[in-house]
Image 1 (cartoon, one colour):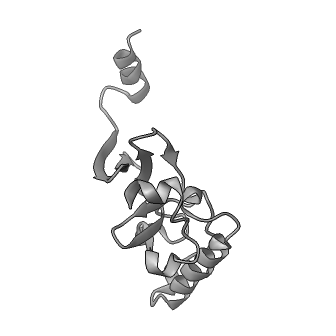
Image 2 (spheres, helix red, strand yellow):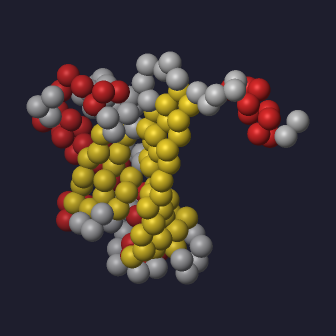
Length: 159
């Protein structure tokens, strides 16, 4: 059976789902940032599912960077970021949307680079009510000066 026929048998004669995905590609110096955004909805589902995935690739070496590549080792950055973003949550005027009043930031936390800082983001329903949407917390580079590895390959790739 051909893949498209298999899909029709599995999903029935009419498609019962929607997927809308897009990519934004941007380049700063030697760094390529691929920012993937998507929206998915299944017929009859209570909620849609949105997602974002950001990838950073050094165009000269092919290395894919992670957030840990941006910071000095053993600098205490994860505690600092956890405390900073937790404070932002606690200062929120709409605290009812959050499941907890604290978050833990680590190397696996999703992030995007901006011109003046780093956006750490959480998917819908991850730390707050689904209706609240994706939660994004901006931390300026100036606040991270004690933690950034400005001699590291990741930082140098875009600065």
